[in-house]
Each structure stands twice: as structure tokens, then as C-alpha cells.
Length: 356
Ligand code: CUA
Image (spheres, rainbow, N blue to C red):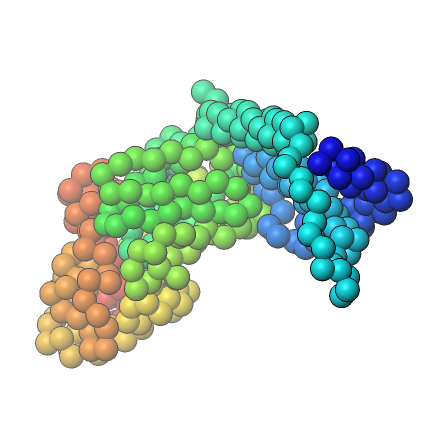
């Protein structure tokens, strides 16, 4: 048995180390090309995503090296040690190789430990928010995102606006079912769970507009539950906050449009005066006709549709799609809440009447 084993290993050593290395380099280069040349992920736009990318590449490099070695040995063996048509003999009775076994146990253990340590460090740093940060309250509901800025006078927006290079902590809540907040360019995902507040730090490092995607199946409109994250220069962000603060206090149709925008109504409804093109719910461009069909006075119809959406369902639409969460909308006091419903309702009515 000892002689059979040494014969096998001598054979490998003699002619073939060069061929093995050659195979390993070719296979390694081909798989590295697949990893590097295919754009698997959109480019990073945040510090947290940069750290995650580091873990990705750390792990991928290890995997590529191991894959090259294993694949080279397999390809080599399949070609070199295949049974010839006239070969009816048994293979040499090899029991094992203690040295090899120790090697292929210890090396992966060390590599997996290294990946574990690097991941733990990145996870800890990505969960860490510096004291000087901007807080954004994120509200997820079927099927819209709302972003409120408690540090900026409770300005609300259906689009996430962030100042460049400023650490941000999202405090995420869900009003109905589980949703999940994800901006691919920022890297991390975070679930929005009813009854819980979850946290997600973001430090945007690139100006631009990036998609906000719901990545938890949450109902009929899940695929349409999208918004945008706009990273802007800090001075432009401050200017936007100032403008948004003025929005609601102005009153009239302008305030109604602001409330409509800020609460994400446009992600489900088409409404020309607000340039909204949503198609999840009925269009609001012929409210007079809709109120007539429902047999109700216009303003009462609009208000009821906001406050108690299941009271009347437009023909062809399903109940329970419009959020029945009016009472929980992120507004400070109940008087303020009913005021914004009236503001939106009367603004919608005025648009119908032809005024602005
Ligand atoms: Cu919300 Cu899917």
C-alpha cells in the first residue's frame, strides 16, 4: 500500500505541477473576469455601502482563489486519471493523507474566521451613528413612504432628501404590515415592522437621485411602493427645508397640494394639478363625476374617502388598498390632522370647480 501511494504522488509531482498551475491561473482569471466585468450592483453612494463592498470583495477574492485551486485539480484529474477503454484494473487502495486533511480543515477554518471578523467589524461600524446626525422618521404604509424631519420643524416629504456627507439615522415605522426599506446605492436594508421602530444609519457620499424600494411583499401595490432618495448639497437641502416649512402654512390650494405631495398620495393616484401619475387607485382628475356616482356631495365625498376609505369603493377597485391609517398619519395633534384632511379636501374641490 505504501508503494502504491508513493507511486501516485510521484506521478503528480513529476510531470504535472506546471500543468496544474496553468489550469489554476486560467480558471482563476476567467472567474475573476466574471466577478469584475459584470456590473452586479449599482455603484456605491454611501459610506456604509463602501464597507459592505469591502466585505464582498474580501470574501469574493478568497472564493475565487479556492475555486481556482479546486477546479484546476478536478479538471486535471478528470483528464489525467480517466480510465482508458482497455483498463479493467482497480485504482490504488489509498486510505487518506493526514497532512492534506489537516491542511484542508485548518485553512478554511482560518479563512471563515477571518471573514467572520471582518464582517463583525463592518456590521458594528455600519450600525454606529455619530452624535451629530440628522434624524429622519420614515413611515411605511400600503403603498407609500413618508419621510419626516423632526430636527427641521417636522417637515414631511414623500421623497427622501438628504444632505451630502451628513450622517443620517432613519427611524422606521410601519402603519399596517411589514415593509422593507432599501436603497441599493446605500447598501443596507431595514424592515419596517408594525409596533417596532427600526433604525438604519446612512452617510451619503454622492450627489444624485437613487431609488427607494420596498423589498418585503406587502400587498397588491408592493411592486409600486417606490420613492426616491435625493442626495443634495447641504445649502440646497437647507433651502428646501425652508421652502417646505412655508408650504403648509400658506393655506389654500397650495397647502393642499403640499399635503397631497408630502403624504405620498401621488404614488397611488393620478391627479393633474399635483403632476401625480399613480395608477394603484382611481384617478382624481374627475372628482365631481366620482362624487356623483357615489351619490354624495363633493367635499364630503373627498373627506370621507381620505378618513374612511372603505366607506365607498370606486367601481373596478378593491377595498383595503387605500391606507385606513388616516388617524395614525405622522401629524402632531388631532386638530391638525383633521385640518389637513379638510385642507386637502377643499383644495381638491377647488381644483374641480376650476379655481386654484
Ligand atoms: Cu411595502 Cu412591499
